[in-house]
Image (cartoon, rainbow, N blue to C red; front, side, top):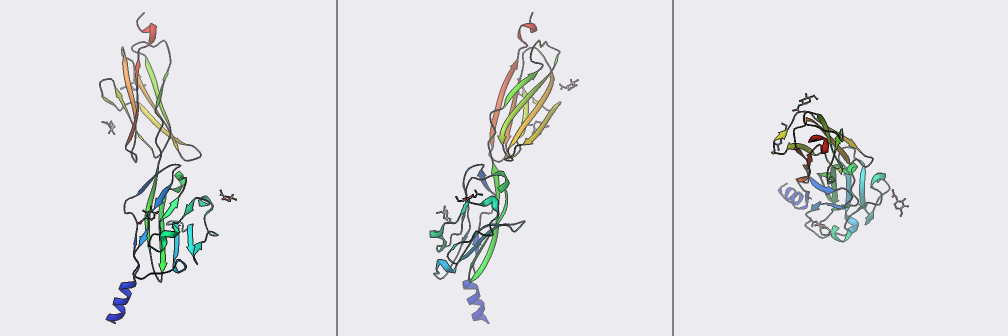
Length: 233
Ligand SMILES: *[C@@H]1O[C@H](CO)[C@@H](O)[C@H](O)[C@H]1NC(C)=O
Ligand SMILES: *[C@@H]1O[C@H](CO)[C@@H](O)[C@H](O)[C@H]1NC(C)=O
Ligand SMILES: *[C@@H]1O[C@H](CO)[C@@H](O)[C@H](O)[C@H]1NC(C)=O
Ligand SMILES: *[C@@H]1O[C@H](CO)[C@@H](O)[C@H](O)[C@H]1NC(C)=O
């Protein structure tokens, strides 16, 4: 019994995948790393690899009998996946996923069999930087101190949702009268619109800052509302 236990232990396959979420940029390629130990040499035809979506079990990529097996592959992954065949017999079952989309976000399970088998899951997160925000005023002209004005700050094409922070000229955090909304385009990328309503003081200035939490990236714009010639007639 001891013999067979030892034998079992020595041939047990163990997979390693990243413990922390893998962050991929929208539109770029990403490698989902999955490696396995192997005690004795084996042929490519002895390896079975399946990558699938953890939740739905839909197939992302298959490999057995020495070649890719893609008849079961979910259509959204067509022409976007590959293993590194030359690395497979060295214990590397990593998946290259090309042109990452927001819809790719989620948990992926790597399954490998070489006699023994094991599986492990990793999390893919998608990120996209926002454009530099733009600010528009409503009303646009004839502004005087004491008027109520709405400043609209818009930034496009980012993911995930950004934190939006408004400050006045002295750096005070403005928290009242802010409405922030998020709209996704067909690619899942967000347009963030934040509206600040304030009563103008002479030479009011404001900044609108967006912080993308995944990229730790900050985009900001600084505006001064002078009110034009009407302000000081
Ligand atoms: C994948 O590539 C093949 C061959 O180039 C093409 O016929 C097919 O339409 C592509 N599929 C998708 C979903 O892009
Ligand atoms: C697997 O191979 C790919 C492509 O060569 C490489 O980028 C990756 O670092 C390898 N992973 C491991 C765990 O060796
Ligand atoms: C600004 O105020 C909001 C709401 O109270 C808060 O969530 C945010 O952390 C503050 N930001 C800064 C930079 O102080
Ligand atoms: C918020 O808006 C209300 C009404 O639009 C206004 O009376 C109030 O002064 C605003 N608060 C701040 C801090 O600007």
